[in-house]
Image (cartoon, rainbow, N blue to C red; front, side, top):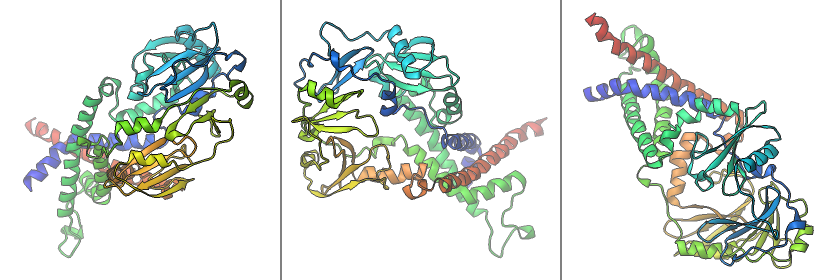
Length: 466
């Protein structure tokens, strides 16, 4: 018992500072998420394909997983993705070469994308808004500041020549109060993924101990029966200690679930990594994109489009016209006729030892598929030991996500308990906001009262010594 009191008292002084920061920054994140540029937004400022200049087929494309035709500055190019994910750029116009992604190129692309004058251009490796690993293949990046009222900054990929990130002054300001402190996400730390995971685990771990010992002590110090404290009170405390005790009893469970699920966000020990398909099966399933043919006819069908993509997932040879748009058009490569949605039977090769039990089309989010950006999808359930589910794009045949029993458990213990993205609740947004605010305010009272009590405790010996 004495050990529990000591841990809660002294470790709680620091832990409550973190709790207060997490609750306050979490409220900011409800309304200002971390900056991200969706594929549709990234293509919004792109130049439509100039089909009159497309007169060269891609070279050496035999093993390509995907081939895309797009404009690079004012030149049509082929972007070719190999079997191992490597990307190369080839000109689609005879006698021309893809434009070099230099400062002048970045300036032109950013000015066209942002529809504003450019204030400055600089090459960067990492910064606060491009520190995630998803930007690695685009580095170095060109950071372009626009002279607009929003203080927009754009990031142009040195690989593709496209805008891959966008931030505004408001986003940057609020994220320094929201996502950056909440995720312990400063660039100097986050650029080393292993170190960042260790810091999150070792900061969250002691905070879990503080939360658990606090709940235990709070319950032990509660007298709700006949044998109450003097004056009929159920708590022995007054002032800030009373606020700390009562808010801990009311919000302690939510506080504990939030801090435990936050600790699980980095998946300690990779306990929730789940199963994966054999690499050979993945390569075989991805197939080959096929050869871009009948370009003259395709030019008539895809007039005004920004991208045309050839793919071969699940053995389906298909063409996507403006795939990043909200309503892409899908064609069969053979005959250039409209493609139909399918349930790809070849997906079974990705689940060795499993038999397809059911497949269903999802046209709206549910508990395990919460993304509205990737709908519709086909969910395929298998009876293998891991109880694997595959989520497949019914038009391209591409596997979007793989879930097994372990990953679905992670959905409960991390995503649900930390974000409360229960579809029924998030569909009723005022109710979800109220739920998050009530418990966050309770957590703030608990945390701030703990900081005040701890500060007074630290100062007490100094006053006595004086």
